[in-house]
Image (cartoon, rainbow, N blue to C red; front, side, top):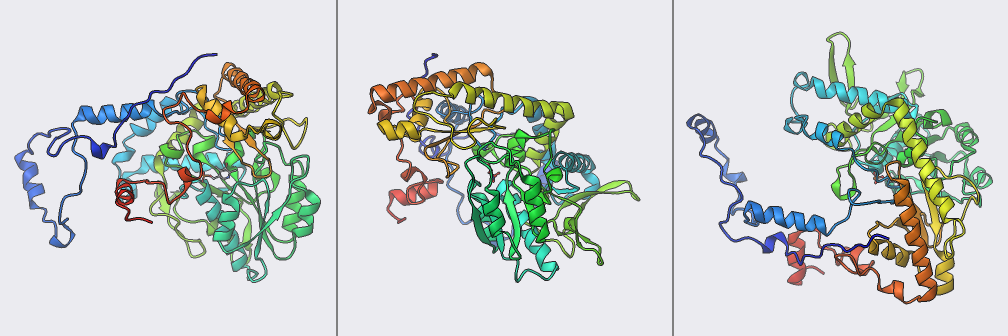
Length: 521
Ligand SMILES: *Cc1c(COP(=O)(O)O)cnc(C)c1O
């Protein structure tokens, strides 16, 4: 094994560094011509600040060292594997970075005249079409800012669909499997629906009989991801679609797991009506703290009202890029009379979309198929290596091949020696790996939801497995040892409740100071 010890700087907060009056950079004096213009701008008294913002004052080298030190105490996909199941943390190719950030897009203003941003609109137009093609839908909007935001968009579209058909008074329920991501029921509830949960069978798929018993006249739609969060393909998806459509309920595809099927099958072909795409998962670009994300939503060309000529796509939120044949220009189409409106200001989170554009362009259709092949292969290789390792289990769908991810369980170890999934995760951190997603999906006890993505090497997967075996060996020999982990990281074991609790977290300097002074309860 390679040894690992993370940097540990006792780095102060940036507000505790520097000194009043210290400058980062000194700008040259404005030229006279510029001065004339700038000097002529009068800022109204009403919007002038009474006092300058209290920002830290540091030299350039202090700022650089501060952030470099912090990055050395962090871990990301540029350091090693980050197999966070469902998050699809693939390596982000630098060429996409270069092309997105050096495109000049960051210099544009969202209110700029369309005629001056034709290049960007053309790229977005093409991306809309590529994405529609990948998921087998007809029209996409790039508007939503993340997967969960796409979900909310999707369920609001479902709501509007039933409203326009005059049946919203009875279409009150959205059906969601128990293996779903928490954002699914949250989105459905936010849109005013009642959430009906259906259980999974021992094969890891939705229990079809249970589903049949809850779907009926009051069903507005179904939200499901395929492959599901257990990494298993929903084999009865065509029957499910038929069942839902029989009651005029719509099928919503949670696209977070698209990495497991891309280029092989499409939600549109499985009978789905609406799909979101997590750009920051399947199509690379950093996410989490490195965001922003993007969650385009695509729909089928399905009629809402045949007589009035209203399509499902008319319900999408603005803006959508369209091509004006007559004038030969691209235009931003704002929300029309049947649209659910705007879910955020302006067009979309452009940088991750450009990133995705470059990623798809580099890969091409064959490349995207290869992505799926590699990620499925590496997942099943991992599952195979973990098969029979003491202390771990792979519940649900025993013996089935997985798609993009596999959910291990540390339940045997927890039951036998009290070493939990959390302890295993800390043991991984201690060896210079990132932990998988733990305790999700909720239906798996002591879950270790592992997804390496296509960009991980087999050697790293083997090293990961070696460490998981070593953790198990230590756990059975000396069960108190894992409770001390991690010791090689910059920060030791945190209280996981406090670390996530709004009462203790200080996301900004202002909150931190208020907490110090006891001004926040
Ligand atoms: C990540 C994820 C979401 C939510 O997407 P965000 O972009 O994080 O908002 C929804 N469903 C599943 C299955 C996911 O993995």
